[in-house]
Image 1 (cartoon, rainbow, N blue to C red):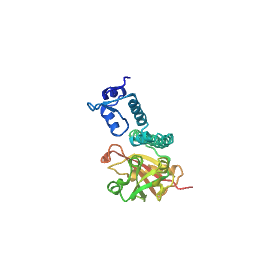
Image 2: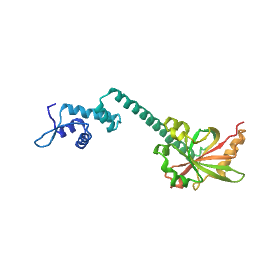
Image 3: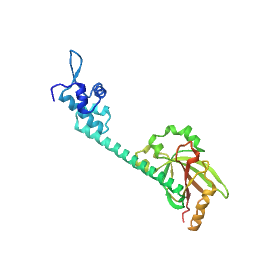
Image 4: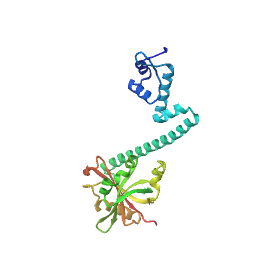
Length: 266
C-alpha cells in the first residue's frame, strides 16, 4: 500500500461507503491525515487498521459508543467485559429466535391440522405461565395495556379468554395476556416475575378449532367433553381459549382457537 490513499481508494479497498468512513471519523474512530492545502483526507496503513477494528467489532454487534470507549482505554479487561455482555445478549437473541421458530411451526401445524379436519381431541399440558395483563375484554389491552409491553413480549405472548362452563352456555369471566414462565426466565425478564399472577401447569383436554365470527361455541366444546367421558376423565367447570389470528387481528373470519379444558386431579 502506498503511503497515502484517498477516501475513494479506502472505500473500494474495505467495501465501506465514503459516507460511512466520514461518519466513523466524526465519531472519533478513524483519524486520517488532512492535507492543509486542499483539506482532503489522506489515509495511511494505520487508518486502515483503525477501520478494520471498527468493522470487526461492528460485526460482533458492538455499539459504536463501546468501540470508541475501547479505543480510548485499550484495556483487555474492558474488552472481556464487553464480550461477556455481548455473549449474554447473543444467547438471549438465539433463544428468542428458537422460541419464535417454535411458535411459527406450531401455528403452521395447527393450520394444516384444522384445514384437513384432523383437529381431534388430545391431552396436553397447559404450561405454567405468568399473567402480564388482565381485563374484562381484549379492548382494555389493545387500548391501554399494550403500551407497557416490549416487542419481544408481544410476539411471544398468548391471548386467552377464560370462560365458566354451565349447562348450555359459556360465561365470559375475563381475558388475559400471558407468557410461559420458562420463557420469562430464559429471556431474563425478571421484572415480569415479581408480584405477578401465576397459572400453574395443568393437564387439559385440548382441541384446536376454527372460530366462527371470532367466537368459540358450545358446539366446539362438546366433542371435548365426550372425549373426557370416554377416557374416564373429570373436567373442571371452566376452559381457557387461546385466540390465534391467521392473517390479521382485524380479520375475524380467519381466527383459530386452542381450547384447554382443565382435568380434575384424580
